[in-house]
Length: 511
Image (cartoon, rainbow, N blue to C red; front, side, top):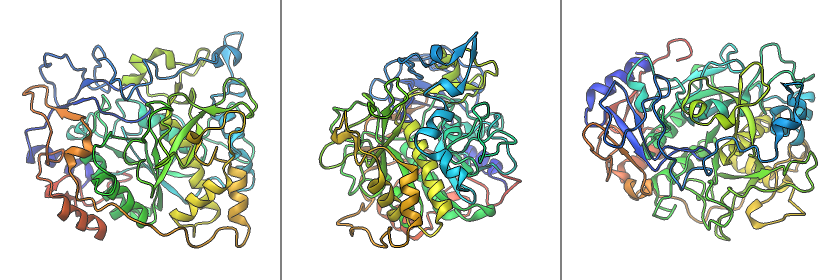
């Protein structure tokens, strides 16, 4: 059975949430609608007039959720990169500090490519809003589709499609690759992500409005653990630019247990710190869990040199109990655009003036920084596939470049430095086998509702709210039973998760 047919079976098995909307939730680094439809079929709009899926016919956008948005902007170009990079009306990546050409040069990725480290042989799972088949992500077997666990997955027209635009933007940063790219001789006229030869696993959880429940993310993490070696894949990295304001400690939070379990199974889980501001005294869940890799964002301040780089004002600073582990570029990053997506239509300020190809869109946030670090991890694992997640984290932290002029605890260990990290990996004895033993780990037995942190999926037709200990298809949530199955790698039984058939049990091509 294909994953697509399994998704349709799920739609028949539960009806209460066949059509849904999200209130105050979303993926980190986006301006997320406060109430918007994640519709699987045409529906009569609710009184709040939620938008239809961007992949079909987007409606008037709702106001962004205040605690998740970057003001009202998707691609903040406050340093006027567009003007400096445009000559006679034509944009050039060479002169834009937010372009992937400039970004990969600044962190040392292009030097890694020259030495043969391009992410080849590594699969990076992107748990997000989907990955669109746009130029730069079209190579043979470049993108593999896992099950579509979003509410869009119930119909063939929206399944796997990135109707929001966020997942594709991040996928381009991680491993975009133009046809014919020679990574040893990169050119600013060709688009390339940080790890251009890495493969991408598309695990769509967010609908066309960005709406997603925490249980969908947990199910996706469990699926990666169970299927990381399927279909010729070698999943070693998980990009998770999603966060909640969980109201319970990470020591019991089920999302924390899910990412720890993935980590324990050899997956480097790279998480976004959040976009609530440097003064925010906590990181979003699951970045709040100290056993995974939490990423904050740094801004170039409009100058090509790194001496005046600073932690971005939107990046969560955390507290002495938990800070970002490292920071990476996350300011006005130019990556791949999904024409007609929600972000594309509602945030025209992200469009790159002078881009004749109309391929690109700017994005600012710790989401973009998370994608950068995910690509860096793929480069390290290309250089040394034997590295454990703990060793990868140690290497990145011990080789990061601290900010000097604008030093702050919010920078964690500093800005990721690919050259220094690879040097540490290549020198015998530089990477110790053991990292400080865990003093505690999450039991996962806490409340699913508490993990949501006030963000809820809502059915716009009935007004029903997904709340309490109920998963995204209406199944009862037993935290203790789930935690045992997740730790054992048996949370998925064929295409069934938590008692519901959600996916197929075989592959149809790369789906």
